[in-house]
Image (cartoon, rainbow, N blue to C red; front, side, top):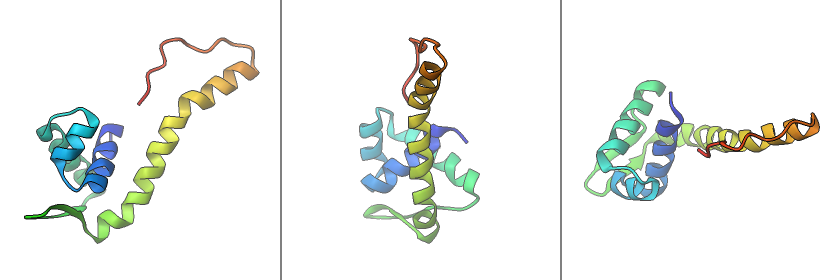
Length: 100
């Protein structure tokens, strides 16, 4: 599972639509739909109820959302954790660290 799928799931959960999530994340709507489908394959079940009003978290989506948010939080903290560790060992921080 790529972080992009987790990020797409969280964004759609927060926005309620793949279109709004795509705009927020800078992807196309179809890319977000694919990422959410990949996420659903990874967790082994649907995480949204789909209807006229857009996408709503179902019970499984509600259950996995806190874990997904925590995974993103931890992933985003890794560069800083590594930088602190490098400073404590007297090594310079890499200049080309890419943010997630």
